Image 1 (cartoon, rainbow, N blue to C red):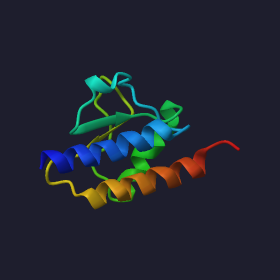
Image 2 (image 1 turned 60 degrees about the vertical axis):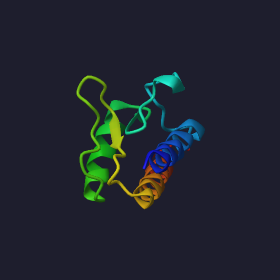
Image 3 (image 1 turned 90 degrees about the horizontal axis):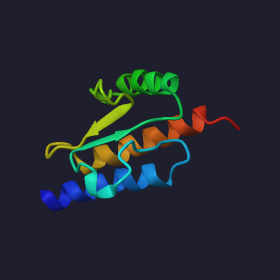
Amino acid sequence: MEELNREKSAMLYAFIEQSDFYTSPVKNPNDRSVANIPFVTPSADLDALFNKEADAAGFKNIKGHRSVGGMRASLYNAFPRQGVVDLIDFMQAFADKYTEK
């Protein structure tokens, strides 16, 4: 399980790191959680919209902790690898839709 959980979190962190749209509020990789991955968009308004659209798309409880804001993907043992793939696909589509050209 640990290996699978590290793979899942590595996939999501890699996506966030390569993105020009999303950022991680936890800058030091040594301080990052394997189970809870926080991220933000370029603005609080887009964060709120992301949370709304993600919930409608079936990504429940993704709203970030009240002290951090943004979003938080919880990748506990029961969360499947395919769920991470689906989340990344959703995140890419959202970024494509709301990136200013």
